[in-house]
Image (cartoon, rainbow, N blue to C red; front, side, top):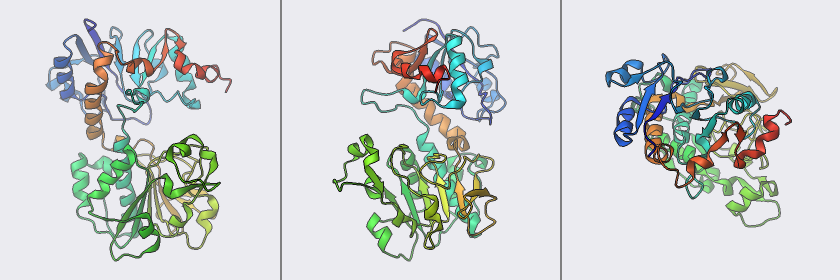
Length: 406
């Protein structure tokens, strides 16, 4: 191991503020025990879900100036004015997909010769991500969908997730509600969808097949989760193949419309490729038998596959109304003809202590051995976007984006 590595835990600088942390106080203790060559310094913050006092109680090092640290670790993008030249940074950078709003960040990282490691591209031998907050997005997103239903019908009231102490309190609140005979549809099969299923499992709902969901009536609330084979088909009639769909999304067309006729709450947790078919178009909402009243768009692809997701919402203001006639956003829960939309794009921030603890343990087990020692598997290298004032070879495709040419 490299001797005497100094690690700085950054104060989050992105606005709106994010309360999550990459390492909890108790995890800092475990980290230094497991990696005796590492010293950890925590930059004070008044917005973290774990307070400065919680770190100080464990006699951990609090330090405003992190200039002498080797590696700086955060959660979200770092303010360009706070970047320290020549350091290694680890955070969700959101630049590798050429996000326009973060071009300046990448330019400053290059200018300051920062080594940038992006959590999103930390993968194992099977190219599977090793750390992510997706599960927590699903957990909170499904809860928000249920909460919206309660407000919309005046049938029950749930506390906002971010007002709960933790997931246990949030789930305890779910135990007191009773749903009417509605149909809940969930799309997706990854971490996000499974997180949503965790939340919905608290209600002990009857889970039905897609065929039953579309064609049968029930005297109890039911849940159906569907995969791509249930909502797209090959234009030429070829038997559905998931990998072929991923590789050739333009060859497929949507078969989702029948679900819009029977669904009450739609919880969208799918991955969507801009080249693949859309789920709900503007015209679909205008059809007289369109039945969906609440859409919890956990995936939150703005102006993407679900036409009512015209903008992201916020933790503080999670819902808006979508007017099918005008396609515009209105106040939620006013016009019963409008669709209630939940499109918060940082859902894990609503349960920051749970999400941070889970994320931190994954970092400890799967990332830190390579980050603080020898990167034998190439995991860190694969996630390194910039080094020595240049894009790395794997991310050279970002050059035109970096220079503002696209």
